[in-house]
Image (tube, rainbow, N blue to C red):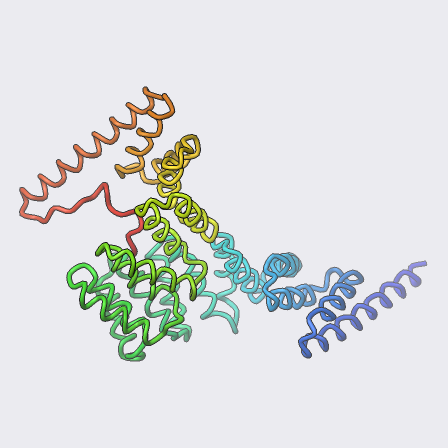
Length: 380
């Protein structure tokens, strides 16, 4: 009986191997449909074939079916927990699924891979960057650079990470390397534009325009120039550039958000509401949009929905006047006078704190700038 069971197992394994060989042939010919079918057939017979799970995941990834790819890579990693290549594959896939915090631990293990070290550090740096963990982002991006990742976007992100981490000299050093290696790069012009933005808008406009000319399909460039125009209240020009940004970068939540703000100023509340919703749809982490949603809903008479979004905005930005003020006004419309008074008290306290801060800055010879009402979308 034992010999019979062993023979059946060997036959099953052989059959699975045949399926896997066929799958590899179909994959090499880029016949993804038949390759998937053969891998599935083989895995039904040999479910512990970890390489096959990984290969199947790679095919799903190639087809941008990231959910199925993640499932296959997870199974491969379950069977071989310490495999750095499998870890990298899963980390990269989770990053593509907009799950950076889940991706990070796998990317850190994946950095031990002989073939993916630089890319693993780079994507880990992106995860930290988007979470605004500047020091950690700089550390991972520096590791990617040391491992041989020399693309201009890495230098750009490193400059910003060092700057936001308060590491000015390191940022200057990296910018010098970027300008030396890629003098005509759009990233060089973009960084120069950002440096000029506050003190010399005309120079900033020229640099952003050069950046767009150098790389018209690069994300964030049209938005950067549009944002500059928006601050100058040139709303028509800003709206045109935000629209261009969405053409090259459809997931630009900030472009949807500012287009919504422009529509709101023009009295187009329904259009504004749709744009704010799109911003949240493409980037659920873009929390600034809750204030805009509340404002549009309040003007459309949707007070209950407005209350919900103003409360969310006030919780996220407790030190900003606008969400508390708009929440108070909405609560009054809903007849919730006591709650409205509490919010107005917060508004008064924030104004008092702001006046005190300005007075202190002036007494010390400093320049007074608004603090509690800083634009929620101020770019890093």
